[in-house]
Image (cartoon, rainbow, N blue to C red):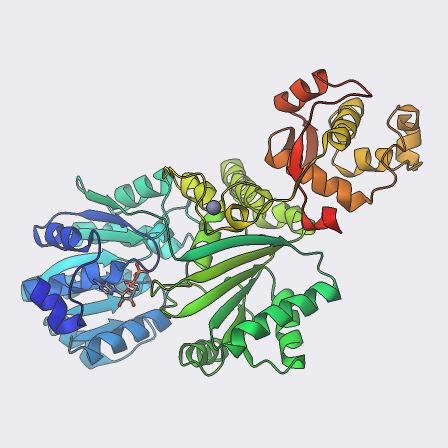
Length: 517
Ligand code: ADP
Ligand code: ZN
């Protein structure tokens, strides 16, 4: 196995798990491989055909990705091809049946329309593995469900004794069991690698989306491009992507753009130019996704809170595949958190809606986190992270500027409590700031003892304080009919009980950029 690895790929040793996975496949066992992006999953299905001298069929969702992989394999002297519904190369089809390829890629649509006689012929020619790449697409619980993937279970009946392997970089318990059952795997060998990407630095900054902020962002990106480090800027909307793209252009920074409203051709060209280092920064929506195998991406910036930590982990994980230190910065604005409705519009059932909402809340918490981001990410994916200080996230490296916010926290929480705890954040903040809006007068909140006590601080300052209190469980946010309400949680109640109007126990909180001003 090592000599095959060396001969074809030029690598002297296997990375963790790879060898074991290849061995299980050669033993004919079904496998589920959950390993981080960049950990080397592809090799796990590319090596077996070279040893078994039979074909591996790989189901992959994107044609551009298959083309890249086929090209890379051919350069290594491995016989590879891809079949898609769009591809009308007849000889490829015939060659495939007669076992002329080591690695044969196909889209899930294609796999489902190929005839039984195609599969029977391939079986006779010799097939050693069916690999389903990006296998989380099979699950409605994954973040990238694709209907065509759901049909793949049928192949099991056509290829009863061929081992199946599902590979993905994201899999919660639910997604994992969905993959196993949808592919009708028999007692599979499950490999779950660590999700810790040690070479990545994680950080979050608050953005107020002002033009001053945009200037700062552009300046930051120009630093990256000056040192020729490839960067992806992920935006949550096409509009944002276009705006950043324009701002970069105005500063004379050469960039590419990639989003779902562009033609396939334009997108492909943009992708290729980025891969070839024709420019160093790609501004994109999450449509710029799977299969970006560019090993030297140094920075991934998210402009806007992502819809889930699964997607954040995957998108940010596209940098530093070569193992060299790289950074993942996320810029969020409070207004991002109002996007829940938008994400929920994809949901078809109440349960799905709940799942989407929960994922989004986890991403919001990540934004507001004041403790180690790596630990939070890893524990979200069910991995224990022993250390309290990773040394490579903003919260672990900043010498924290904490101050005693006990009086302000007391005012805010007492006010939220007095308002009845079934409002969003705006109302209690307005009360503190002494507003006499109709809503406040109608509810007689102007009579509360806290009315006007917080007017020397701007509304955003109070909201930032609320974020801190939410992230530390003093305040609890809940969704009710798509509206976010905030109330004092048990920890906050304990705090309030130990307070009097002129004395509060110390409560140290770090200042966010909004609080510093
Ligand atoms: P994944 O599919 O898990 O995201 P890839 O299979 O694309 O990861 O591999 C990521 C990078 O690691 C590729 O550039 C690949 O060539 C490299 N790689 C994979 N296995 C090894 C190995 N055993 N030794 C050195 N580099 C490897
Ligand atoms: Zn950390």
